[in-house]
Image (cartoon, rainbow, N blue to C red; front, top):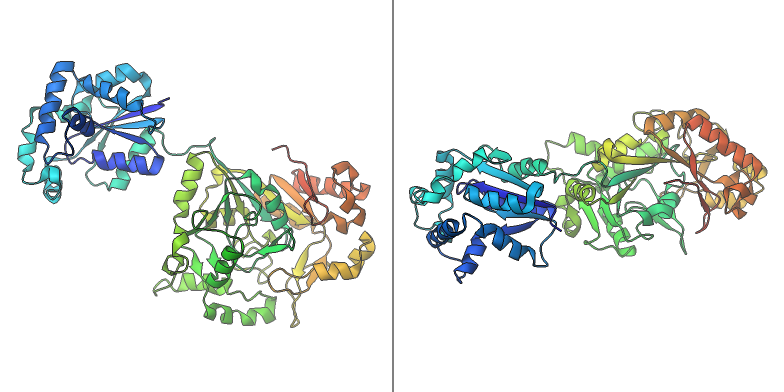
Length: 532
């Protein structure tokens, strides 16, 4: 069923056809051309000038009072190619508008385009290469009796747009707002998964668990973060979303991301991702070998991963006066290059479900962490949204992932990687009943394979992170580190009493529910308590 009829009017060269094409391209609208209807009636192909069409249109207007347009439109609507929103390009007399309104009622919106005569004449001269304009002056086209009164339709139009001082894209944006083609709240939505501590909280496990529920998976950050997902063997994502192998959703790397082209192409190949599924925003920053070298001193001082992410980010800022290369400049990435804004706008418009995956943790935020023991970006939900280009008003849920015993990377050259109420892995093993060798083997960083420091649960950081991130839900991981018997639990009531008490305290301090509980690292190790 047709939901909307957009009727266009305006003098020649006001931009009616360009507007119709723009609405068709951006919003999937179907275009009915009165010019083609006249050509069909005349049993001719595309004509070389306007005169035969103007003559036939005037004859039909006189015979039907303008009703011939809606009659042709009804026949055209019976074809299977038409969609729910149709553009009529274009009408020339009030009778044509009235007939369409009588047939379709409130579903009709009439947009009239206008521009000063000198502007239209200048456009005409610039377009005389077109077959329909060849050898015909602007003054001659205006002598047609119907054309002379087209401008009077502005008085009966719902919307009048002056196309002078506007690009074609400007006119499309203005028209789309009037016909409510732009996305609005209540269609699509965005959920966000971020870390609440110092990274390695288990975001990959949580994202892979829920990825199948979404249509678009978005990743930001850089290759300094590794998100491990369960498999045989397990796989670590450094640049692609962690749900890549667990869903058929489309994939997007947002404009604020930083990528290592070699590593990204390897991951794309290993995951069997093609250019129809993945879009990399053209403004993504590229890591160069000099960026990796520049970070070596940070490894000694603060335990940096030395991936080049921070140096490339700094170069993006300080190199604005130079020829700094972005993703759009990489021949290898060219098949995947696109515009994240358009991808996301289409997702909102068509009611898609979007999952944004942050990296590292809130405690490592450049602005909100314990400087200088921080990463090179803002790791809060707000920072991730900005990197992706997602407005906060589209966010439905913010899932903050926390582990029962937070970790920080071990600095192999002495010094510290930042504050932590540190304990030993032997103590964690003693409390949980797990084998300490098993824990130490598992507790190595996904990106650099370094051993990890471990600490007591940071209750103050939980409170701060919940507030900073606008958290709506917590996912608590590594509950087997409280008691190894939790690995056998597949329901919440099967968790040990101390574990349930711990979860209750997390909910009190964070002020939000613990909606997911990870009891181990396998396909059935997430207890899902969500009500959404």
